[in-house]
Image (cartoon, rainbow, N blue to C red; front, side, top):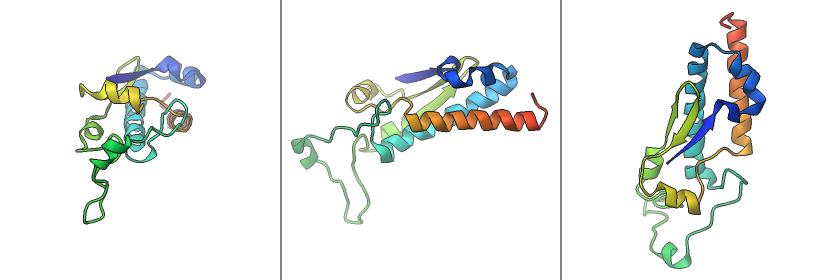
Length: 147
């Protein structure tokens, strides 16, 4: 399950992205894919919020929560929302091509999790970070005479 972000999806940056050569665009999209991957992993590990509206994820049911060991004897977190053995977190990848960026996972159970506790998407803060990344990329290339 992948969430695709087309270049046109970052409307505020269309003119910047459109001005880039295909080589520069590939470099930019690679950076954006890496950033989206990290943002998604941070959402799963720490934020635990819906990227569309920043609403906290629903907690486990009381009965299910009783079956989870949240902390081990060493005090380390064992289980939390969307983290059991870490397979989902480890499977998150960012990909890109000439037309856009995608972030997601190939795990068959990912759509179920996405339906109950959305982890794929771009929050308002994520979008601002991505816009800053694009602007900085463009400014650096312009200063280097690479545009």
